[in-house]
Amino acid sequence: MSGNHRAADDAPGVVGIIANPAAGKDVRRLVALASTFDNQEKVRIARRALAGLAATGVRRVYYLPDSFGIVTRAAESNRFNLDLEPIPVPCTFTASDSEQAARWLAEHGAACILTLGGDGTNRVVARGCREVPLVPIATGTNNVFPYLVDGTIAGLAAGLLATGQLDDTCLEQRPRLEVWIDGTLVDIALIDVAVSRERFLGTRAIWDPNTIDQIIVSRVIPGVIGLAAVAAALSPNPAPTGAFVELGQGSICVTVPLAPGLVTRVPIRAWSPLELGAEIILGQRPCTLALDGERELRIEHSHHVVVRLSGSGPLVLDPRLALREAARRGCFLSPFTSAV
Image 1: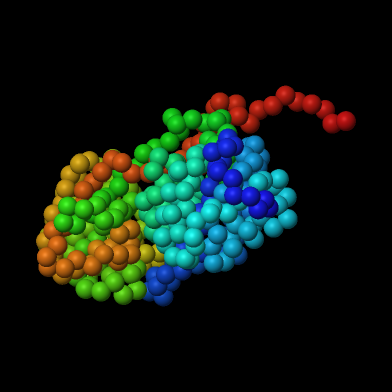
Image 2: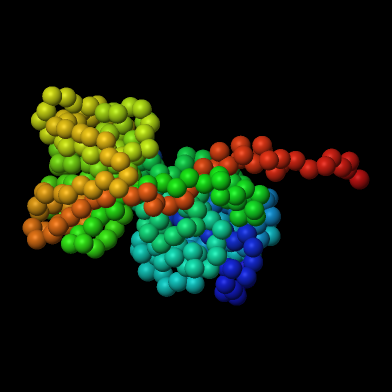
């Protein structure tokens, strides 16, 4: 690997990789039947992604150093002929590293960012990536936002975009939920915001519907796991709009998978669809807010809290749709030459 920290924008087709060694290891492995993505498997996924990138002509990859060394282990022997560079940001081995790394990649002209993580990992990356598209590989728990796709396919898709063989027409801009406290944007969620009566952050991961008063989702997506499954059960047709759900004693219950292997009944007091730009004023005090399945914010009596459904979420490349478009464009075709 090169030891020079050159700016990403001095070479075309630069791709970033942000892999989270902590993804897929939260307490839901104890209360449900979620799989564990061990870090050795993440190394293998990253290695396959590097193979896909190299096959498309990408030559430079910037990666976030992590506590396990996922990308450095994946690139041992560097048989892919890639110029691999660590992203030069201070590493604390906390979630803030991913946000800082995404911001650095955005400032230095990266074409896209491959992520290895779950909904929480991608939420943090989305806080810093600006207009840089994400190619998210699922290695988390509920994995509503990222794709359950082989690293090879994700690497090929990212490389085709980075080298200009695909263009912005292949990208989808996702919505996001913005949390405003006392008039200041303090955080975002990509999938859902839940209002929990729990007063402390605790283990962060949230799975017990008896502690939840309200759920706001960015999109209604059938076939998902987690709190977003509640909205999907109430409105089973895919919709570009979000939804606001109030839990509690009412006329109906929904049976939903709140975590892998954990199927439970959730009582519903009321619900309604949400259009882009809609705002929900939260009244529960004190409480905690769970963002994409993890309690992140403690709300006190004095806070004025608004959750807004915004259309300015991250740009995303669906790897399988990208390869279908690449085939349509003939990206995989080349003249036949006989072996010498």
